[in-house]
Amino acid sequence: MIRADEVVPGDVVLLGVKDLYVGQAALTGETFPVEKTPYPVSAGASLSERTNVVFMGTSIRSGNGKALIVVTGKGTAFGQIAERLRLRPQKTSSSVASDNWAISLGAWDEIGLDWCEIGPFSIWQPFADRA
Image 1 (cartoon, rainbow, N blue to C red):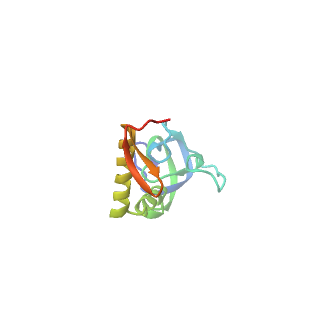
Image 2 (tube, rainbow, N blue to C red):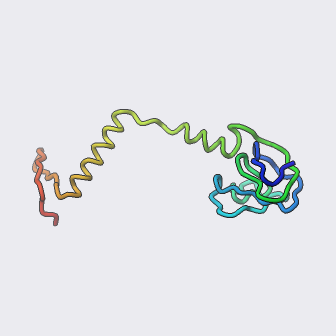
Image 3 (spheres, helix red, strand yellow):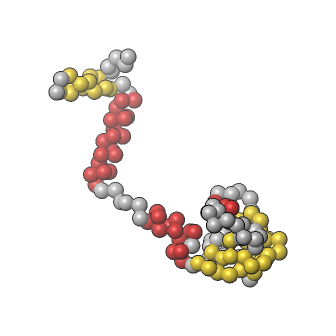
């Protein structure tokens, strides 16, 4: 049973509800509480279209419902997002250095310092005419 003012402990499928509204802004970005129903939805529905599922970490704003916990931990919608963020490759020292170099060049370009290519050599020409 899920009730108002509770935080959902796992992703649950609704079996029955009475005026159930859920705040799921942290997961889907929806500003207002969403009405949830026990009716089936299509298998390819997005998170915000899954009106028969209440997700871990969301909060029950009003009403109540009978639910079956189907997924907990890393298998939940929140868990999958956290896993994708964790798997993001870490920057190496050389990639950080090249990022810093690119930012520095961009800053010099903004104040009017340009690089000019002459044959196989590059020279620095301050305040070059920008045509």
